[in-house]
Image 1 (cartoon, rainbow, N blue to C red):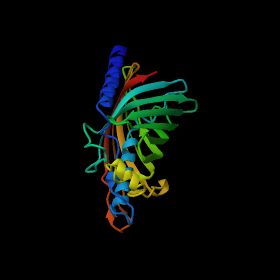
Image 2 (cartoon, rainbow, N blue to C red):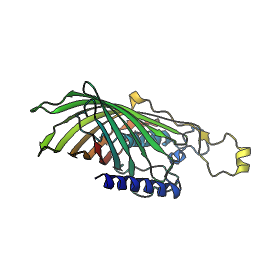
Image 3 (tube, rainbow, N blue to C red):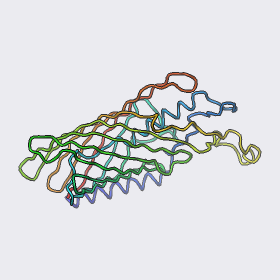
Image 4 (tube, rainbow, N blue to C red):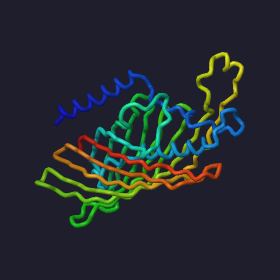
Amino acid sequence: MSTRFLGLSLAVLLSGSAAFAQGFSNDFQISKLGNPQPDGSMADPRANGNFRVFARQFAAVITAANGASPDTLGHSGFAFALTTTYYDLQGGSLPTVGDFRGPRILPGVHVRKGLPFSFEVGARASWIPESRMGVGGLELKWAVLEGFKYLPELAVRGYISKLINSRDFDLTAGGLDLGIGKQFAIAGMVSLTPYGGWSLTFVGASTGNVDFRPTRTLAEADTELFRDYFVFTSLQAVQNTHSRFYGGLRFIGGHALINLEVSYAFFSPFRDANMETRTIPGVLAFTGSLGLDF
């Protein structure tokens, strides 16, 4: 088992290195969402709405995975897993430097540590292939109910995730979820745990001064120092929330851990500055985890 796990880890690292070497075509280029400057030569009245749609969708992507059932590891427990999240924006698109290439995945790692009194802390890190961007996250879980023979496990989990190293764009998402599951032991050393739950996510996003004409020449930059630079309207977390439902199945055999999960985030329509009703396509995600549970 350890040899296979080491081989998989090496394969993930090599694939990440290969993607890094191919360039950064999947870096975000926020200017592609349109220029929100009201009196600019390139003004787009839908730009701020486009920014809000994109920020909320991608916030759903970076918070799409729980990666664990509601029960905790115990005060001395520890778990490490390699994860991959495949996401579908349900008709949405990503404003990247080039046309987004390859499958829409977030490979990463997820580490969890058990604490006394049915608490558990976790951290995760993932990256966007063929980009310089990554995602970091922290979580704290409390199992309100666990360890009873005829009762399910119930847990409350708080989490926060942040996009890292994105030019001109800051995105932070956090929230709270409620999970329920039940562990079934099979032949002593194997267990299966189906689980599901609901999550409420808050999204905050902002930009710096965005250059909406990045192809300008050096001479044009000298003579048009502040032309076509502007910021998008920021998203306030308390005003931008969405729900996510998820379900999964965890398998533990010895110390080996396999976890499969599916989730769907959906959003309410909103009215932009032009009083146009905008809809946000839902985000469907599938997450697979392979790791060790001690």
